[in-house]
Length: 340
Image (cartoon, rainbow, N blue to C red; front, side, top):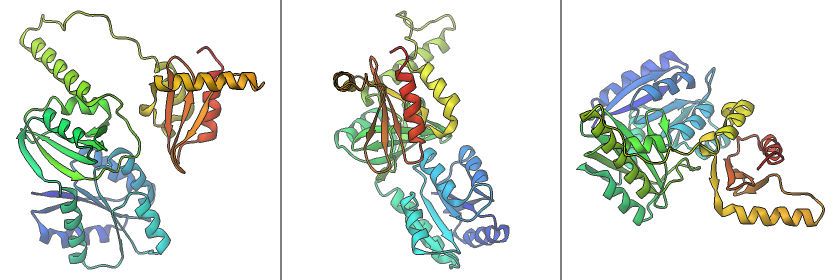
């Protein structure tokens, strides 16, 4: 099986030397080149990449910034970091940031190739299944409460995607540069497919909040409607109530205008389970003379948390270490001061 290695370094001579050295391992390994992190992200959006090997010190977007972007947008792709400026702290930061390995320069091409092959083997150590229907198999993953990445390829070999399970729960999906529910719906319409299982899941925040069964059933319904419309242009989906307006559309638009890409708006969701607790907190605040609760911050760990906005239902915005927490909390408090 051929896997594509994306080599990222601003030293063109270094890139060409690595490409020439790894050519000895073809056809198992095929190489693509990128001169910095931004160029690497463009290739990731256009091409099917199996593993990334990146330098750290680069212009425009360095290796640490690239690593963070890969963890957000392409967390199923393993990353190996190489650097001539090797220190224990630098290696620790790279591994904490999501890299699976750190290789100090200079190194032997044979050693690098061995690392790459080992990482690719580990990425597919869960096994492969061909020509299966995805729905039943994925429900087994859910039942076993398994944490893994399921790489999926349709029968034509032209469409590929990934599903991310954490403790048996579907938390994200990716097809190209699309993520979340939209990507999951597309994957669930492919049948039959080939599945490869990568043990472990690097996802740190959920982008999918719907139940797996509901997603599979809804995808099947959409596929049936699409087939019916294709067979009969006059056909229409079954009549029913019009779709409800997105209750978060206004808040999402205001957050995007105020914070841009620094906030992961796809993770904004409602959660009725918080309604009663936030109501009681607000009542306690009024009794103590502090006034009603406008917004709350929930700390989940040193790096992750969420802003909670009272309402019916409550609105929840998960945050990570890079989110502008204080500004977001103030913004959400202002939102809470308006109409519920």
